[in-house]
Length: 364
Image (cartoon, rainbow, N blue to C red; front, side, top):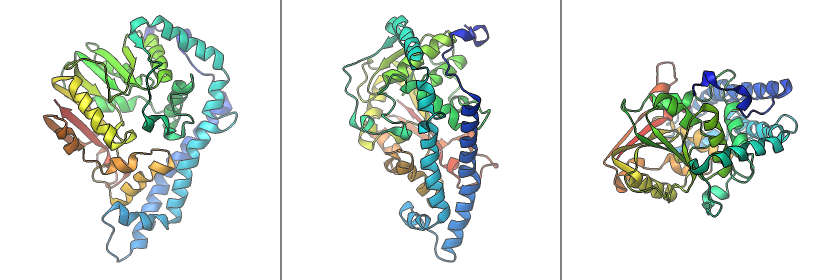
């Protein structure tokens, strides 16, 4: 069913007051300042503090220089607390706003889950990995798995991070624009979350039979609801990406969006091995990630600081992870790691945060 034929009454939405929208518009403006003028001023202060001394060549050398800068201290405070304000402020925070309509939302999600039949497989007995269970990723209290509304709060959080009027799903389409131009009969969204990645994929690739896995039951229930709203049928299941229950040689493509930095290295290696197993020969494991590449030591140190500023716990280990070696060690035939072209242009300052974004394409 095309989006133009949808009945908006069937769409699950959280009422947003004018004050709520104004509050989050203010936070977005603050974040834009933090990631724009403040980062530029931090870079200038960093260069000035080095002076004629040899510039740091590693993150370890750059970090002490940064730590002494007032600009970096302010940046770190902003990164930590703007996110906290977004989720936790009484009245206008995401959690409080979503909870105001709690019973109705839960009923809608449960109804969508019950009507899904075999299209949604949940596993109450699934033991969540410790790396996932004990970290409140992105300062989302309790993680995105412990409360029935976590999926909707996570979706809300992603949307309100974007600058005003920016389509939060644009990043999916930019990622898919880098894929090889060919048909994909069966695909797997690796960490599907609230389902937006699958929805954008299906719009572009109506030929694909779409599957999605995630550890979070609340996210999968929301993904199922969103699929129904768009008239799509996905096969969604609650699984650990290190231990998938699909048969060997199942998928033509497995895609993801910024997943690698959320997983400790030992678990990531296991997950890569499992992804290769369920791919067909010649199948692709593909998607973008940040934190590696040609960013300067200063900007890489700033990105590493997200590990403690925003509960991105495994970012520090990911920055130095050798993906090429790990992928080849588990048996991928070819490994391509290239700049993420949509964010590499003359308009982007060299050495900035986004120039460390890379596009990873592994072929079985």
